[in-house]
Image (cartoon, rainbow, N blue to C red; front, side, top):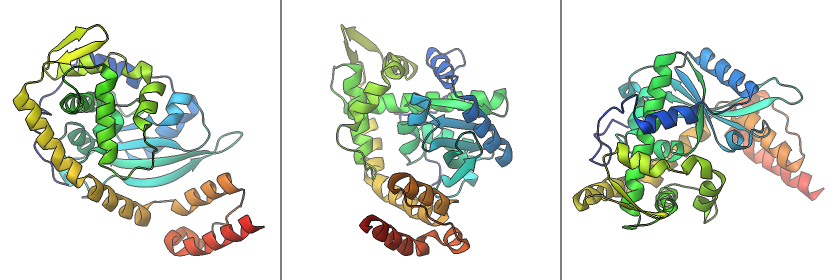
Length: 314
């Protein structure tokens, strides 16, 4: 997708290093991460020649090494040079005792990531995902660390503006975040059950505590407090601009999401190993990774499903 100038909902401005929101984001990105995760992230980043690697998802919150770790590998280069459909997704494994570490790895250019965070792309996934907790598990240098911090800060501003535009005239911070996540879930193909937004806020309460007022202040939107409720001073014209900006993304969200799923199904590196691990983990049936299955996971799928059906019958 070509870069698109953001509306007043996402102004083209850099966030000062001493900004309170940026300082909070930088501290959050330094969240404690298991040394094994940092080593995995460093290996991914150095092998790819990346600028930074972000770690996110439920394993960040729980500290568990089980299941599949989630990484974003952010590459150098201009956003204009990014593939039309991003990110590229792969499955990786790394030796670790007592059990190998497994990871789903999304790869894209840091410049594209930052543009999406600033709402200059049609994409909704970056700012909606990274207003939630993440950790900077590896960075090539201080400049990369600063660029990632600026991008995540921009994602918080983008999300906060839309949350206020979608939410009530006055309410708790949770009211606004719920309005945001309900809208972004509706705009994508999601398998989460209704009420998932409540789970996000409950398990990440510390992360979201005080985040909305800081993000609105950084966005130039005043906030009055009435006990536990806030009253954002968003200009009516600005609200209309934000909602108009959102309507286009809401309309294109599912088609764009579908295109990415189709691409991932054809280009997911290591898809056969990932599927085999998932099947054995959930059913107990081991799946042999043959050269054919490695090269053609979609063509091999019917045979695996047939074997799985027979396994369950037994």
